[in-house]
Image 1 (cartoon, one colour):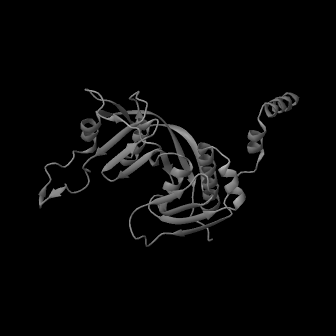
Image 2 (cartoon, rainbow, N blue to C red; image 1 turned 180 degrees about the vertical axis):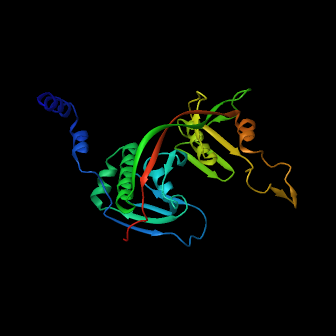
Image 3 (spheres, rainbow, N blue to C red; image 1 turned 90 degrees about the horizontal axis):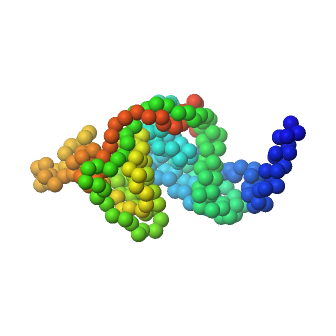
Length: 266
């Protein structure tokens, strides 16, 4: 016990005052949060409005599974379990904290502030949805994203920041310092299976991908099938980006939902 106390003293002594204050400070939390089940959204879009340096957090027409995806920074394909309504029932959330929380978030670096907001949402979900989860590693089917024969077919991006535009049959990613890994993450959302970046390509790129979904009608042009419609997603990845997906199995870090309930009354 004496050794542990001495080690703690040494660790605290080696920590800067600012970092020490952050470690010892109580966790940030929302003061008020209105949560309602969404039953009449004007569109089928799902929106999360979040500025990491502000305490305000809003979600419109978002499922609990999508909220977990944000709060734990985990793709939906790596979130397992949950009740029957976990990915079908959607909610509107408007959560706020007082000015002192905004001040603390403004004092943090962007990544630190983003992490703090995620922790605040985790606490909110545990409180209002009675959510409990645990993390584990499982052997699951995965795709390796690799370079296809002929090499990559995309160009470097000079765009500032990161831009992501996704839809049922498109992905456009640009600006990230690790753009290929971000593409793999978005592909996992579309394919429902973990996609691991195995290209060995780092850097900032402009990646545009369009495909024709297998589970829908073919694109039409003047009443006839569009001859210029993009191919299905696997062929599109190879033709448009010079990459390909290889199916295999591997260890995957997942979040497992132990319990969740419909949100408590405001």
